[in-house]
Image (cartoon, rainbow, N blue to C red; front, side, top):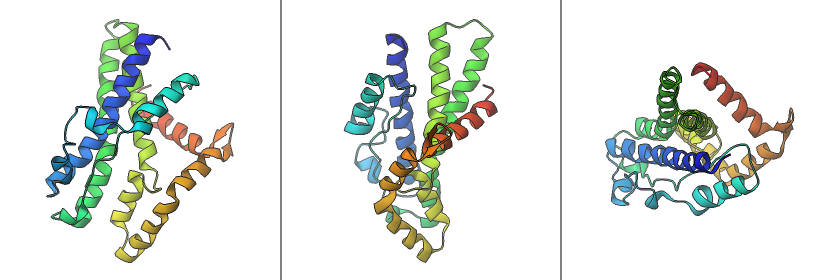
Length: 210
């Protein structure tokens, strides 16, 4: 990856994970929770969103090891569901807002890509748009996995009966371990987690015309 494309890819990744978190906060605000707003997290300024591991260390590590993918995350936006005017609906929409925002960014980038392709746009522009489609689909698929603390687990819990949701919430203490297990379980030349992400990303890339 040339330096210019790498720099643009990092900017796209940073922008995408920030939009993901901001949408959680904005949706929570719509349901009466001002926690993210008071914490100064409803902004596209990257500084309040930087996570030392997900925003800095991991992308650098992936670059140094010549990883075929660039990945990362921002610091989670603080949300207090007890402030929601409608708890069940609020938990569902706040949880899924980040996922939908990434799919929306992927769709917008895909539309622009297909339009510019007919006008002979520069290679760097097309590759950056392609990466924006791909990384946002990847972020959406990854976050939709129903393993705590990923958004998919919160989406699922918001739809479960109260007692069952409380039992499922206890699983959060082991979520990171389960994700590591999925990462190391081999499936078809990759890991089970890699297989899930690749299959989901391939499906949406075809939907978006790639």
